[in-house]
Image 1 (cartoon, rainbow, N blue to C red):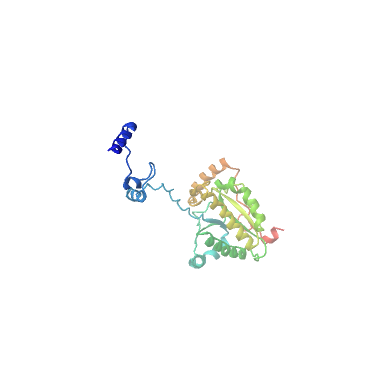
Image 2 (cartoon, rainbow, N blue to C red; image 1 turned 135 degrees about the horizontal axis):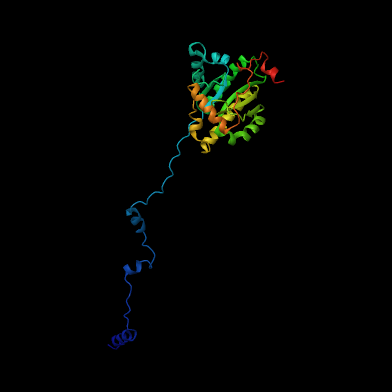
Length: 272
């Protein structure tokens, strides 16, 4: 009895009854620490977090068509009788090739505009095949220097003029981007002088510069993907007037095959 009275006295002195922890209480973690095995269950039951907003997929950029000039004599070899050669060229390269007719060719040009649509490898193969025919018309061997004229939109001039100059040194050909806009068009000529392989490589590289501009957003696709053909002399005159206001006086680039400036000498003789 005396011991019980002593325990009651101790309780009264402290004012707090000492409680022995139960097994359940002993297993509880300290405040702030989650129960083991409970957090994963809570996470599983919780609604999934919103996924981070994904960037919109970039719209693929179409390949920039390759365009060049071809003399009338060479056009016949490119197209062939009833279009036979042209169809064969497209089958072998996988590219789509079109040649401007009288209505789509500006009056200032004595040549025809050839447009090649396809991926880079298809265009490169087509360019080489066409150059072989152009060299035959010029009576120039593959290892001799011939002249090839490609077209670029005038909107690209300031972006590629310096790169084109360096490109010639890299491929071993003379590559010159003319400042004058071809009368009746919105295009500037690129004059390429070199052997067949060097000229073909230079032409592909120049078109690659346009592709880089479009993919970088520096050149609107409409400027190169959908070139504006001229269908009538009146349209050509109107376009010519606007072109002359924003650039130096237009003129047709000198080409050894130009019908307006006939010359009986071979291109290799003119270049010496």
